[in-house]
Length: 317
Image (tube, rainbow, N blue to C red; front, side, top):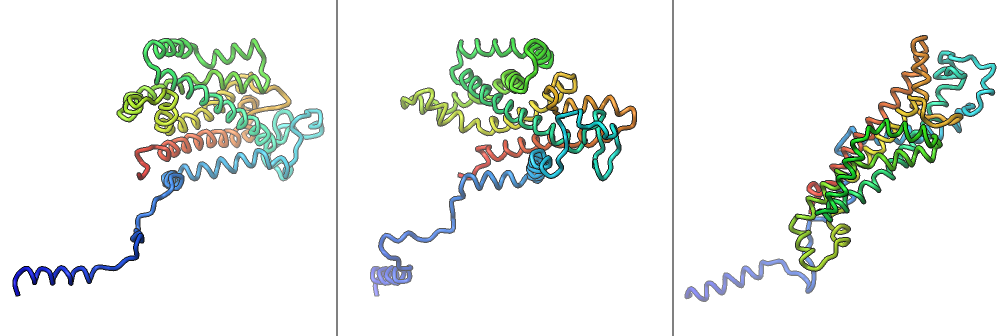
């Protein structure tokens, strides 16, 4: 048998051993496309401190709105506290005692938490929206527009922030709506610089330049390229803005410029408790201070984990 015949025979035997498949049948594959939300959730859950922070923050937030339903106490009418021992130590009737006005301390912590958390979230939302829009316009347009917008921002940043808040509140009052607005509309300056840096970097990358060369408009590039690739920093800055808003609201409350009575916030409660700590009334400071510190730390841990979860380089393509 010649070599040609032997080669033909070997080829036929090889073809016969190949697995047969139906027409238009796609061979099965073990590689499955993992949804983007599941990848981000996996990255987030790898951070155990962030998961614990989410659980803790959820419990505290739920307690602020639900505990008053199961542990009803008067928190708005001081006249109703007559007959109640002021600065009373913890007991069955008052698990965390009473404060210097006769209010139940446990109920007051969660009553003040409603205002602190609500104002912090709303102010943080205003902050990140304004900072993102301002920073993206400044960084993407660049040139003289960027220079002008950044000089305005530098002028704002040169003003001591807490003194600015004190001045504005002293002039215009301290209603709840005004506190939300004044913190939200003045806390975005640093956020805008961070977002502007991302926009300035992304506008010079190859895919942005290629989109521009193909005729894409500026809004299209911002929507399809700049914003998605800046989302990790935007989400991180948003969570930190909520923590900052809670801190500044508490600072104002500690200085006596917080929410007006009969409402209260954690800063106002800490200010009232600090004047009583020297008398040994520890229950008016330590439980609230522990919750306050843990809430701020939890928000920061969540922000760090969200930054990793939305980081484009950690997502599988």
